[in-house]
Length: 317
Image (cartoon, rainbow, N blue to C red; front, side, top):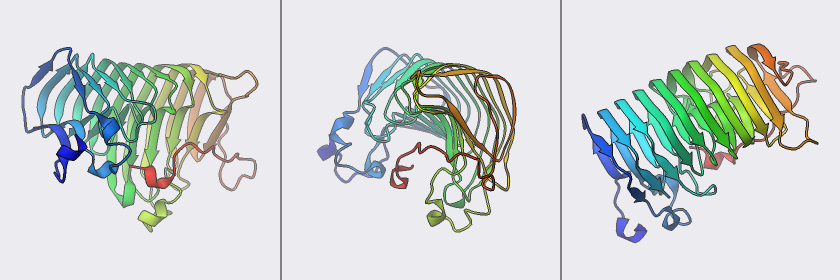
C-alpha cells in the first residue's frame, strides 16, 4: 500500500468533499494497513483513512475501521454529522492514530461507539462548537481531548462541548484540555459528566503549558494564552494509574475561570500510591471531591511540580 501510494499528495484515503445528505450504514471493515506506514513514513505524509470536508447532514453508522495510517476519521468545516455504533481500532503504540479529529465544525454527534487507538480517541480542535459525545468507550488511547489549540500563536475557539456517559480504560489521559502557550482565543462551556475510569493514567487535565518548547514556535508565548473558562467535571468514578489524578496547569495572567468539580471519586489503582492534585492559577469550585484541591502558583514554594505526562515536543501535533 505504501509503495502504491508513492508520491501522491492527497491527505486522505477515502475523501468526501462538499457532500450533503450522505448515509454510510453497514457492518463492514475498513482496514487501513497502518502497520506498513507507521515505521517508515512521517505522520505528515500519511493519509487519514476517512475525511469529511465541507459536508452537511452526514450519517455514519455501524462500520469498523482498523489500523489507519494516520487519524481514522477527520471532520473538517462540516455541519450536522452523526457517528454511531462505530468501532475504531489500532494498537496502543501506533503513532498519531487519532480516532476522530474535529475542526472548524459544529453540530457533531458521536454516540454508542468504541475507540481503541494510539492517540486521542476524539480530538476537538479550533473553530468547533456544539459537540456531543455520549456513551463512548475510550481506551487505550490519549483520552477525549479539546485541543491542542493556539499553536504558533494561532487564534482558536472551542465551545459548547458535552461529553457524557463515557469510559476511559487504560488511557494515558481522560478528560483533557490542552493549549499552547502564546495562543489566543478561548475554550468555554465544556462539560465532562458521568465518566467511568478504569486504570486511567491521568484522569482530569487542563494543560495550558502543552509544550515546554512552545516559545520556539512563538516568541510571545509568555504573554498570550487561550482563555479556559466554564468547565465542569462531574460524577467521575474509578481508578487512576498514576499519582497525579487531577492536573490544572493554567496560565498565570489569564487563569482558568470557573472550573467546577462535583462528585469526583477517584481512587488509586495501587493501594500504596496516594493520589495527588497539581493545581495552579485556576479558580476552582469543588464539592464532594475525594482528593483535596488546593491551587498554588509559581511563587508558592509549596506548590508541587507537575508530573510529566506527554511525549517530547517533536511528537506533538
